Amino acid sequence: MTAATRLPVRSLVGAVVVAALLCVALFGDRYAASVLVYIAVYGILASSLGLVVGFAGQISLGHAAFFALGAYGTGILTATAGWWSIPAMAVGIAVCAVVGFVLGFVLLRLSGYYLAMGTLAFNSVVTVLLVSMAGLTGGGTGLAGIPPLDLFGWQVGDVSTFAVIAVLAATAVVVSNALIHDSAAGGALFAVHDDEAMAATVGIDVARVKRAAFTLAAAQAGIAGGLFAHHLRFLAPSDFSVIASVTLVVMVLIGGGARPWGPVLGATVLTLLPEFITEFEDYSLLITGGLLIVVLVFLPKGLVSLPDLVVPRKRRAGASS
Amino acid sequence: MGADPAQLLQFAFSGVTQGSLYAFVALSLVLVYRASAAINFAQGEFIILGALIAASVAAATNPFVAVLAAVLSVAALGAATERVLIRRVPRGSVAAIIALTIGLSLALRGLALVVWGSDAAIMDPFTDGVIRVGGAALPLQVVWIVGVGLVVLLVLWWFLEHTMAGLSLRSVADDPAGARVVGIDPNSVSRFSWAAGAALAGLVGALLAPLLFLNYESGTSLMIKGFVALVIGGFTSTTGVALAGLLIGVLEGYVVGLVSSDVADGLVFTLLIGVLLLRPQGLFGRAAAVRP
Image (tube, rainbow over all chains, first blue to last red; front, side):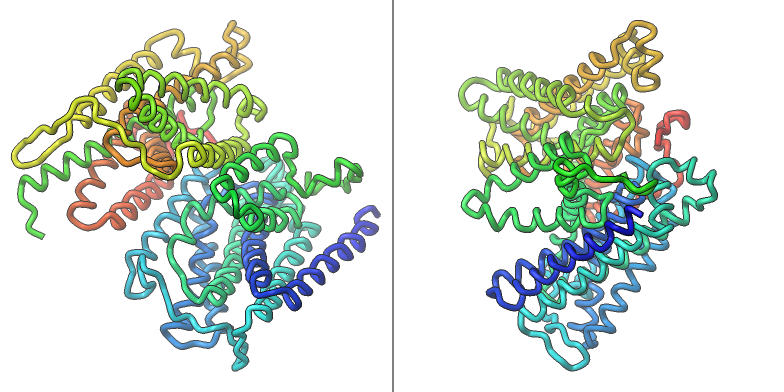
């Protein structure tokens, strides 16, 4: 009953936020629209990583590798092979899903530090391949010449329109992850998070549940990659390093991984932070690190749980904590 | 490619240099892991702070005061980290420890940038000069690093495997409640191991500062390679992780010299994935040492 009464409120708040963002995209200047694209791209990435880290409780220090596969897949197919955007992005997303699925079989047998190390190693191998397969990827100097996004002939060269599309894509991803959060599948993920042995006892196929979350997260990172490629129209390996993966984990944790809006909030905060403190650019690392520590110590459920301090949250049975 | 013997020897030298460095980092991680089952993702920044402090102090005094200052201040930082952050985390909560120490690493990197700027630490070698063997050159600073590294390895091995205090570290990691029953205070043991691990990191930093150009950003790659050596060596074995560090360094030395540094990185991480999947207890670890 509480879930039923909560849902409209949450949807309403979400709709207002999305509408406000769309207004910024349409009526703001180019700078605002460009920042918005970054928020959407990193929002998708953080939300997808939230499935793995926040819902299923599996650490991954390699999510930027899927971002890379999506971005370079789209970039290479459009720039070099001359494909249209949509089929190129679809192939990029499919590659992410397949690699995520296969890697799920291999790496998700590990847990804790071993899983952290395994995913980090995967990310490092992908970064090395990006640099060394220069014929295909442009190597260390980067992949140039990616055309603007086209939707079957309609070229989206204008950053405001692109921001609208990016915000809509991000909304779709976040809403679908919110639906997963409230579904039986979400319950299974949180059960695995809380106690794998217990989850197995009640008939949850733990390995399959983890693999499903990992595969879906990889595919969603592919969407972010496709958008990123078409926004920047130039890709360099440094955006996809282990450091980028660590930043994504930080976004999830600062925002709060166990709730659907948490990771997006974290992505928004960390994307806006450097924009607001441009005069004190040198302090941005210190502030980010300090913020993460303070949030982890005093708000272990992330910034998204701030309102709980004012209005205690009525918990529905089971699921997120 | 025509690599002559002198060149091959030079690759071995640079391999041993890198390798002893990785071994050193991994040893400092083992010390912490043995007592608190935690891995400090800020260890790279601990090393960099050691290097920056040592370079600053050395500019005013002499290298030996500088080493002492680096070791003591980073040890204090390690103890404070344990007291303020790590003790809040329930034991075995891997994600929370990773998250907190990642936060710490960002904050310390930011602090180093604010205090020291983005310039590399400049410090004179402890003893100037190079050794020349058959056309290859080895800076004397490397001899210092390898020598001190060997001493540290011996002391650690003896301490952890053959003394009561070392045994109490292991008992706390295995079973804190049981350790308390026999009169060991898990908190003070844990704080000691963090201080000691951080002291080692400070020492590594001070030894490295004259050899490499280290700035606020250099910690990440050091930490990652040390972590790789830790996993390949089997997490808890002092000699195992030291050997693994050396092995990775020498492998890198040759592949970097003969092929390229990208291929070397790719090879190391592929080897790592192989070890994780086929021998998760590490090349030199005992099966019983595997922990989730």
